[in-house]
Amino acid sequence: MVRLVVLRGAGEAFAAGTDVADLRAITTGAEGVVYEHGITGVLDAVRALAVPVVALVDGPAAGGGLAVVACCDLVYATPGARFGAPVARTLGNCVSPATTARLRAAMGRALAAELLLTGRLADADEALASGLVRAVVPTEELDGVVADLLDRIGRCAPLSVAAAKELGRRLDDRTADVEHDDVYSAVYGSEDFQGRAA
Image (cartoon, rainbow, N blue to C red):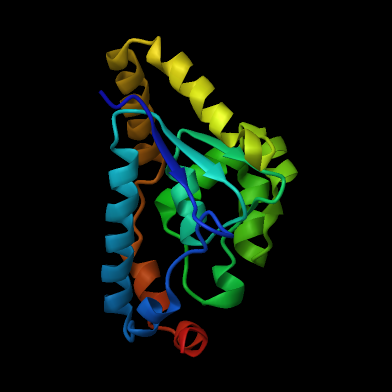
């Protein structure tokens, strides 16, 4: 029986976000809406898992990588971790209302807004202080963190754990339930996006 899912990057990053080549293929606002709905489907699949999902972040969790982190139940980072969604500075696209809501809930309105509005990346200590990260540990201790979590979660009733996750997911969904396709269409159809993604 699976009791825990761990997401961990390979190499120098947790996840650096969307492949720019995928974004270059978007030429209209309608295509941007379709793209964002596809990304939402992937993130919803992570959120729908009935067992705890843990992110182990070593290096940057940027753009789509930050969106994945925001879907995780617990986040542990190394001192070299960085968190942000610099799309306003780099690509000219946008972050979904669901990801924005989860970031605001996890790290507070002020820091989430600053990162989204300026494209800045927060370091591990700042993410810890904000509440996004549970603990900052050396890279070599990440496996021990997972072993400890698995031991503690393994002693819990699976249905209680699943219920906590499901109720949290439903609360997240209520917060993120806003109209958004018009915003996606305007952003992806704009000269700002077309010029940066090219």
